[in-house]
Image (cartoon, helix red, strand yellow):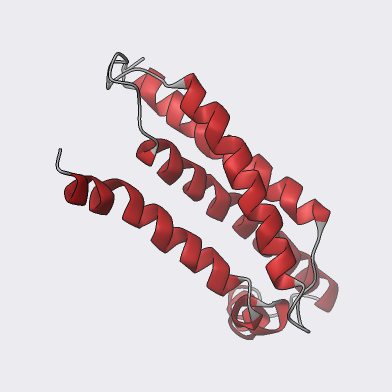
Length: 152
């Protein structure tokens, strides 16, 4: 496959998703901003929802966001990671998965450092852990879907 096509098919989605995460780490997706659309939506679903339940729901949605965005990143990275020529294209690539997980964990840590530069955000080791768990979930999904489809 030509190098330019390989870049657009494999690496451009990774770069764009990393940019999405980077932008989300600014004030744009801070708790104050996400509550502007999440709270009215939850009140629409359940008008008598308590303030405590709203806070808990917002917390859970935000943490689920961490897991899902880093699961997607790990899937995109695993897909883009080059496989050795001797490896079958349809085989599960353990070495690639073993490289993807620490890369995503390092990106998650750098993302938390990036957040610390914004007044409305703060860095959290807990979030790095959630992000890394999300990356592992993404890789587990790739493996499980591949097994289900009998690719490996």
